Image 1: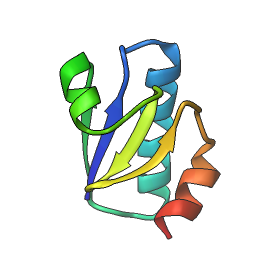
Image 2: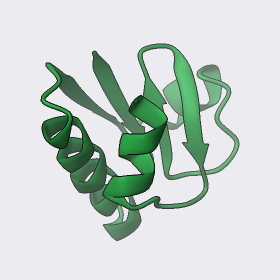
Image 3: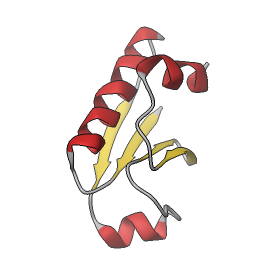
Image 4: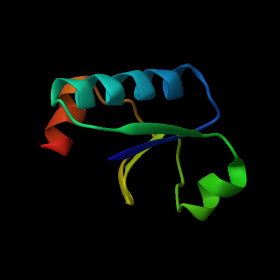
Length: 76
């Protein structure tokens, strides 16, 4: 599973990455995390608000930081 975090690298982006990693670990999933900070790549991905969470090719969250439990439910 590929987890991509889109954003400038701000505190909210870092929190989203931490929460996504915690959720994946709780479900015992194999994953790789990518942090995308390039504005052109963010726009090309169709993301309008950051931070954003993309799993494989699906955008699950834009513009907020869900808890690890909320992300775990999205992944289940």
